[in-house]
Image 1 (cartoon, rainbow, N blue to C red):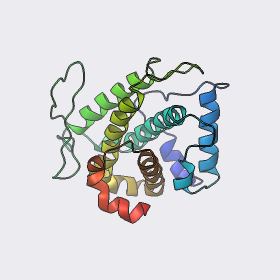
Image 2 (cartoon, rainbow, N blue to C red):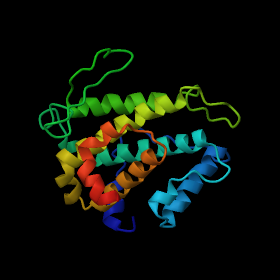
Image 3 (cartoon, helix red, strand yellow):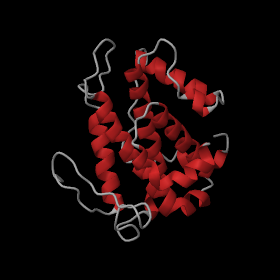
Image 4 (cartoon, one colour):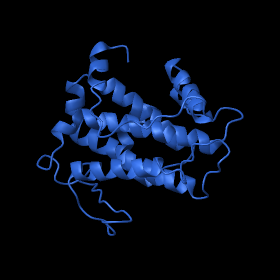
Length: 217
């Protein structure tokens, strides 16, 4: 990210919401720093995602989920002015894939929505999960709930859909901003992480299969 133009693009902070941060002094913060350090050292992404010796899987996963939420939010923020009710009336990844929204409150059945509406609901929904101490406890020693990885799988598979939509419908905008190297690196990091720990069903990864094969193998 040494490119000053890239910095300018990604520092606009056109995210929908404030970033979730880890409190200094906590074990999560130390893990976050460890994860960032290996990335900044230019370590092979495939190695960078591996669980460090002596660390708990749930802690490692929690740190990455928050980080991916922040990054994907930022990536979508950079193209969001071109993703409108008009340009993207359906949340999709090309003609073959349509994503419908479902949650525990208003949309109890899978509902077709425009991409910007879907993204808004998605980011709000993820934010509620990661700020919920019962799911993502911040105090060391507080156990994670039994269904933690189930919740995480749902969050990550939905975040993957943002990549699908951005790559298939808005890549020209990413290229125009000169941000493709950054977005590609974020995607590779995400892909290696979810496959390392089996956090996304292979079927979900199908829409970007060819691109992933070129980029990640």
